[in-house]
Image (cartoon, rainbow, N blue to C red):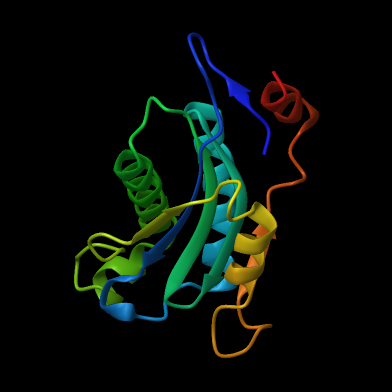
Length: 156
């Protein structure tokens, strides 16, 4: 894992997060997942967060993300969950009323663990991909095709 640099510090912090759809409803389709990938790319531009992988089944999402020390892990989770939910409801407005009775997209809380030297990124990606009833059921998206500008910013 590369060491990142901020104004007054350097850091290597990566998290594996799992967000579960409210009521464990199977609402995440390939269209919603495509939207989520785009939203995560936009979150990268606004916040000091860098996504490494995103995987899903119909009722939950796995995210591997690097975060600057300015954010607590719970804040990173809050940023991601709230923006993903808002944008999903904007694009797929029927979900909120017809499937979630006007409520929230995600359950409260979620799962978070750190990914470091003892538990490498490749192992976490393998774990994320192996989730679900069928290994091919979970769709994994790796954020390796960043624009050259984003790739250059990451190496600074």
